Length: 213
Image 1 (spheres, rainbow, N blue to C red):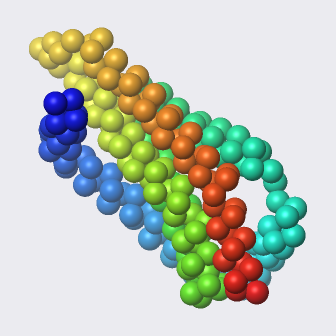
Image 2 (cartoon, one colour):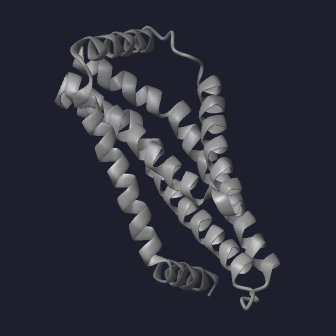
């Protein structure tokens, strides 16, 4: 019964905000495409410099000199938590809506640039490397960012309507409670993604690099 109830709630949520989800997903994909296009706009010397630092990192990874998994976990958790936390805070403020959209676009651009650069420099090897280094954790992170963006956008719009349309009398506390629960659920997912990025992705990257060498 509980499982069916949760499924109905989720289905109603996605149905109610389907237009917002479509907009957010399209915006994110635009960021990915833009990031991939930026790679082609780099000069030859810029690509060479970036690839040199990337090669240094791969060399450290194969020699076992990379940062410890615990440090990687802390860095990933802190970085993504700050990103999610900032989006959540911007959703409360009335003026934060444009910034939320910019943050989502930047997130997509970073993913697109990373994958695009690896593929541009290493071809299929770069594609497989980006697949094992970026996809595992982003399989969780990207849906979390998209859902969080939708929740912050809808919450911000509800705040704007409450501010300028006095006839709207939806209870504020239940709405705020759901907003807090969304943040808590997002943080749990970010914790899992950080663990994958720190403890699984380096091993997969090392296996792919060794197979390519």
